[in-house]
Length: 378
Image (cartoon, one colour):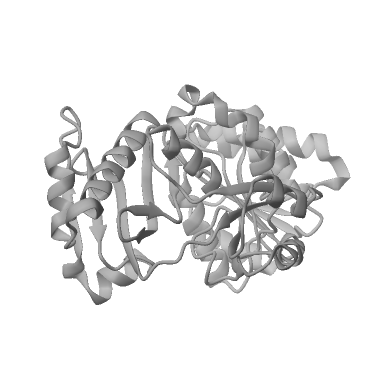
């Protein structure tokens, strides 16, 4: 789960890290009063809270020089989609004058099974760009998770960035706090970019934390804001989540259902290859039972823009007969609202599944390319 910037900063402050003074406002709030109540003095940074990278380049972060300008800009940002997402929350912060920006981040390197600390003196840029243009400028350091990030290790990384004195001490404290937050919150990523270098300290101007979804049962406090997060999903994506369907809405007219994210994405690519456009991504997962398949088929066919549906199942732990039963159940439920569909079905209990489909007039395919050609001709 990606956290909003203001949530990530709430976390890092628990570890004693100073962040720019700011206030969170929601659409409909009295922005002027919120700024004044928070004691903020221009210049200010008005920042759209959307869960995408590159907000600044996309126009989601604006610097203003008066409270009235902050109000005007806030109203504009609430109406402006940032990378397709319309913000419902803004963070208004004290703008911090600075000349140098650093990068500090921690990711989980699954191949090494260790946290990996990444620091660079090229903050403010995408790390991918830094890696491409200045690979030598990214300093990497693996942390022993049993020992944690020690002071001398954080200090050594700061020295490699050329820091000394109070800047170095501040960087050391910040990096240890970031590491501790990373571990305590079961994060996949914790990073600050940019991390402003001030004369006597470092200060995180931006902060991102992504919590491993598998650990959310240990961080139930974020369930409270789930509805706010869902504001960034389409109505159909929200409805799909309530049905426990892994669904992403797209703008084509071919409904796509597969099992496994890899196969489903490959299926979408094949749909494009045959000159058609997917209306969605829907992964029924492994071991899906008939009822789950029924829900998936009904859900995709209920999309008004879907003209026809392609189901691509490779049965491993998923049983082809269960899939077939689910398809038949959905078609019976939909009646004359059912839309044309083509099924590619192979794997475990394939013969039983094929027999079930044939009894209702559906000819299943083994070859996905043959199936797609049939779909194209519908």
